[in-house]
Length: 245
Image (tube, rainbow, N blue to C red):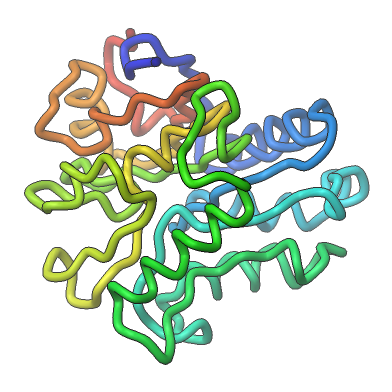
């Protein structure tokens, strides 16, 4: 299992170049994979621009939409039409713009139930899709997991000091109290069950936490991620450490 110090690192000129490289990589991954292709999406402005690019030529014309399934790494516990919804952002930027079957879109439920019940429902959906109740390292749940990095080192909704960091059985959990609104997040076991996990990080405000991450600071939830497949970092120059590993 790969650690940050062993990850593949690419440094791009600026956020636009980062998003374009991410779109190229996503297209390459999807078109070279035989059969179904499964993605866990991230929120945030950096992946949002990647989604916009995928929805436009040349990516839109060749991406295998009909065999790609879309999940979410985490979600704010707000209605799907709320401006803060990760689902809303991905749908507006990408999924409503391309010929993806509705059955291939798997949002986190956020209405009509409590956060813990929503987490349990999403876990059931993931297990039904996967076809087994236990994850097999030789058969990852996702082909690609897209990840962001918060200034305090969170990724998905795995925040410092939260109980969810010690969850190694459940695939999905509710996080209450770390942010103003509850969150639903995939746990480490589910996020790590992938062929490739990629952090997309831009801006000078992220450089300090990126440097801590590459030093292996386990106080950062992102530094504890150990995917069964390859770990990648796509950074813009402003976020990149002065002495890249």
